[in-house]
Each structure stands twice: as structure tokens, then as C-alpha cells.
Length: 113
Length: 115
Image: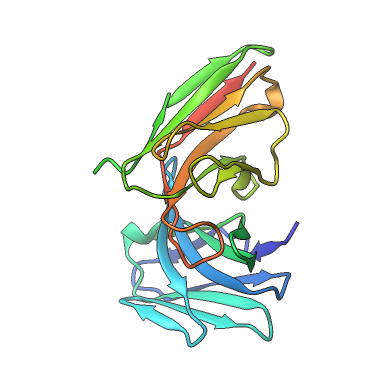
């Protein structure tokens, strides 16, 4: 099984803090990368895709380092509503329609007032 | 659009009982998936259907069967439930088969307890 490893957390931070999550993946086969967010007792939802050049969406910045097989998510100016579990997801793609979406176990973030 | 819907939301079974989890999507997606999520584990793929009429095993298919009834519906059947199948089951769909940059959209989940 291809592995995706994340910081286990939990991360407990005050409002306004900057927090970073890391994720490593085990295989260099052609892939695509994502961060999903999962609220307590809810379904996962896509937060953002991760592109080779890095990408930003408001307070969220995602970075990819293929050489080190490492993905990161940075959240600036944390809000109470950011409290959730963040899932690192890697799509190991073998060509055609063959591939496998592997989810990390998730990192729990709790933002306190 | 309702997106991805799942029924039932909760279910309690006794060991050996059978049941079918239903999933439907109204986004005209080609691909559909069944995952299970257990405490301390990531989501694990049970089965997927890249397109109508096809199904393939995922990482943990043992004890399950699936049917892609039509483009909208993808059901998961437990023929003889075991306590090890106690889990939260998520159905998902995506526009393209696994391998692209497609986003997967998840249903709200079914919480299953097998006694």
C-alpha cells in the first residue's frame, strides 16, 4: 500500500495564529495532491489542490516538494471556524483510468479564542 | 442539486445479517467510490466504479459487494456482517476516473454498528 503520513496532532492554537501541517508520501509514481477538510462527524470536503509551483487561496497556502516527497499546508490568521481535521490526499496514478487515492490519517486542528 | 446522498444514516446490525447501503449522485459524474473510515485510520477504498457498468476492487474489498445500478447509483452490500465491519461508510463521486485532478465529492456517510 502506498503510504501518506501526516503530523498526528492535535494542534491547539489561539485565534490569529499561523499553523503549518506537513505530509510525506512514499512513492514517486506520477501523482496529484490535495488537502481535504473534515469537520467532526461530517464528510471530507476538498480544501485545495496542490500544484507543483505552490498555490494560495486566501489564508491558505499549499506547497509541494517532489524531490523530498513532501506537501505542506499553511494557515494564516487562524479562525475558530478553521477547527477541523485536515486530510492530506495523494493520487497515485498509473496511467489510463488506473490510480489510487490514498488518504492520510488526518491532523486535527483546534483554534481557541 | 443534492450532490451525493446516502441511506441510511445509521444502522445497527447483528453479526451475520445482511444489508445494502445506497448511494446516489445527481452531478452526472462518471466515477463513484465506497470508502470506510475507522478511528486512527485514513479513509480506505473498498470498491470503485470508473464508469457505468464497471466495478473494481479497492484496498479492502473482502466482505463487500457492489452494484453500479446506473450512472447515478452505486450500492454497497454486506452479505454477512461482522463486527470488524463496524465503521463509517462514505460514498463519493467524481467527474473523471481516478487518475486525473478530479475532485471527489462525498456523501454524508452511513454509521454502521455490527454487534
